Image (cartoon, rainbow over all chains, first blue to last red):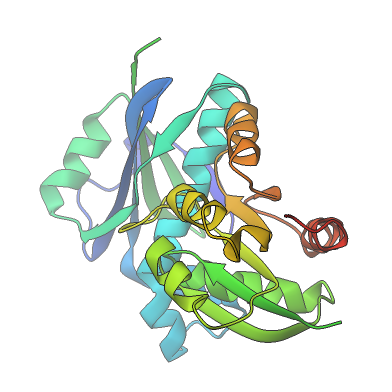
Length: 133
Length: 128
């Protein structure tokens, strides 16, 4: 699975059966990170990580958990890349919820959002930073 | 030599990945125990010998840091090496953790080779 940058203008105006993973961070900076992906991608992600078939029951069951961990790793990597390896951050425990259509529109309209495609499937990533120092 | 391992992470996926990576790294695992937060981790070590603990930092109920502090205050558990496995990359945080008694730190994502290297280093130098 490989994410390629995409133009937000090329993203669909609405999507169905997506979930939203989100987490917050505080410390050197405060902010949040959100990732919107289609539900089947969660089980595919879990299958890739665990070495299972996409339609394996365990991959389906572990899908949301795998997505949370992807967001967790992404957040740690982004913060270290932006702030360096000295500042300390406190990361929240990620959450995954079903995504309402309005939220996709909000994300698309936000200047903090980046668009990607994974095998031509659209996903959105929003990083909000409220710097405290 | 086979190690009795405890993995403490609120993600079942991560626990499974650590187990799989230990196998890929050629680390011989005897008993493998899992816990979803620091309190469960402490409970898992009651009446059970664990050679090494892998723990995340951010977990509900009890964090990995709180668990390490409780272990350091226990006459028996303070000798059990703890390897923190986390997404955070702060060198400052790593130094803070080591000052609390953490034996080593592995940043996610990690390779089997790194995991093996850290385990070999930690198990060659006992805490206590």
